[in-house]
View 1 (cartoon, helix red, strand yellow):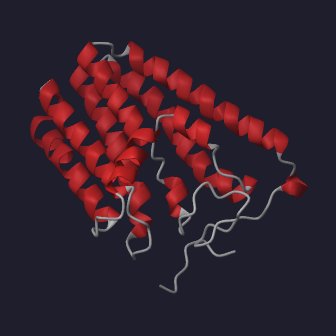
View 2 (cartoon, helix red, strand yellow; view 1 turned 30 degrees about the vertical axis):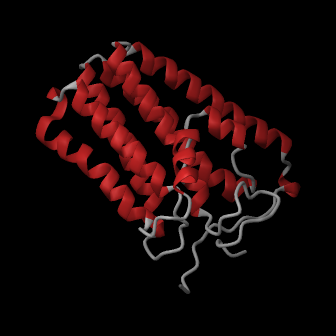
Length: 219
């Protein structure tokens, strides 16, 4: 089956590319994308480069000595531009870079927040990253091997890359780290691992539809 047409039984959106499933947008980024509509004509990857560049430069220049204000501006900017990118369909030749760019924005952002909060937050953020990377792995292989996407309600409950970044920022500003990271890690792990187990229990091997997520090469 072509990657540009998802199975009707398992497609959570009507967009063309299976890569849309891998973005992991939360309600905030999705709302920004809906508000932007189709007015933008900039490729999604270009918006994501603009989204992550200020934060990356701040990490390089300021590192763990960055002020909370600088971190807040960089994270909010990344979420705003990343949300705008969600309004763009992934049909251009650089579409394959979009999920990876979002992973970089989220992971680097969380690590930077932890570093600014202090050394005690580093073990906590790695616990959170373990839970998140499991989720991102399962988003891909849930489609590939179970033939079904993550339920929308579960996706929303997980916050998306945008929601997790903003929550981490709030915890930093509130002085609630590292405990907040441990709490989020436990909640994210319970939510997504529980969903995986539930899906495997309810979808028998013979009933699982095949799902080919290889990208078309004939652009």
